[in-house]
Length: 102
Image (cartoon, rainbow, N blue to C red; front, side, top):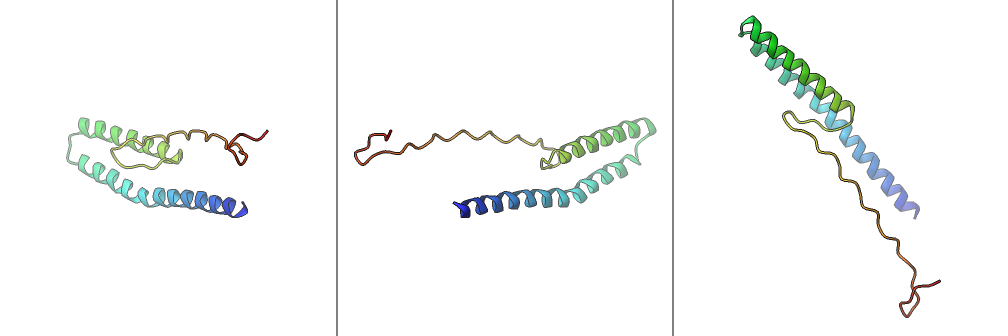
């Protein structure tokens, strides 16, 4: 029983640390996308450049909110919430002939 507890604890911590590493290594990629988009606005006229910069700011804020929630972020995709687990039925003890014990 104790080994099951340790195994589950280890796997939960492992899953959380992998999630944190993914968020850490995704951030430079996201920043490069935003910087590239901003550099491309340099060739636009003032009105269009301002509108594109506003879109970039909105996207950065949306992404930072998702990262703060702990959800993984891939550019251009929406993250899906996890499905709730169904409760497992409790096993009842049975006697040798298969009838439930009292």
